Amino acid sequence: MLPGMNEIVVPGVDQVRRFIIENRPVRGHWVRLEAAWREVRAHREYPEIVRELLGQAVAASVLLAATLKFRGTLTLQLQGNGAVSLLVAQCTHDFRLRAVAQFDEARVGEITRPCRAASIARTARLPSDQGSASRPLPCTAGGAPLRALSGIPGSPRDVRLFRQLVGTDGRIAVTVEAEERSMRYQGVVPLSGASLAESLEAYFASSEQLPTRVLLAADGERGAGMLVQKVPGRAADDETDLQEIWEDTQRGIESLSSAELLECPVEELLNRGFAAHDLRLFRGSPVQFECRCNQGRVNSLLRALGAEEVRDVLREQGAVTVTCEFCHRPYRFDAAAVAALFEESPGSAPADDSHTVH
Image (cartoon, rainbow, N blue to C red):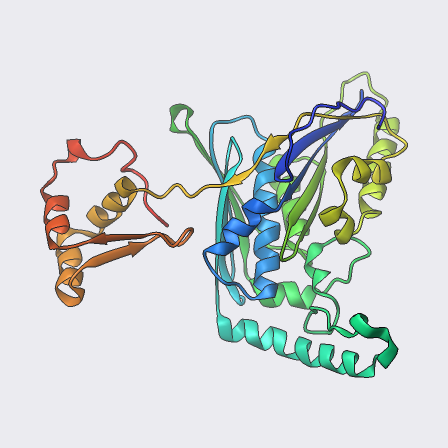
């Protein structure tokens, strides 16, 4: 056990946990998802390269929410002119998450087509006695393994791949909607670097003024991430000593691979990356998938469209169907339901009518 390690844990894999370096202004969070990540993907089929980026965004939304003290919802939104035009990952203060990505299938196919050809060529050159090793690996347009998106030092990285996915003119928006007094905060930064992780590091440097390192990884089974920050120290602390600790912390992060992040227990990761430091690992919080769409929000959406437009759809299609993009749950309105919708007085609307299904 690490020195100072708190032994209290939450059973199960889907959880987020906080850790600190004792008596030093360095804090961090770790998350790994299995069931919740599978449920996010269960509602839509994503190409492998899009799935990896979405999994990283889901893990990132949990890490971002874990750094805040609030009650409400945090939304991480990536928008650009690449093959993935929009990606949204949401996480509440109690770690209930949902996510969706919109992408151009043709453009994604153009990215992955050279990759498949490179994989086939590599496989054809393998000796026959390598058996199962001959199975081609997912890869980037340049033929390197798909982990190029992870942003983890030591992993294959391809700036071109990330830019093909998100575009050359993109941005990241982090929006916090707190329940207390309906507070809303949003930070927006350009997409930068070779990965989502690097873009989030730039977000913290710009919006929060906190030196931050972020590691993200995802595959077909898991999504995982680690975030470490240097927080303001006490005035009496030796700045030279604190900077050396922060630099050593960064070297520890850089020593971790994407495979380790996805597969190793958090205790093992911390032992590998920060063995020289006295760490405290805190109780974990469970994370789960939950879509927050409901009838009231759909009613609000249709009222916002207006009676004339909704009735036009009703005449053309015989019914109005609204499908939630996050969970694909359909909400169907026949003629009687549409009539009732616009006959209701504003005071009879559900309390959460101010929200809509995205």
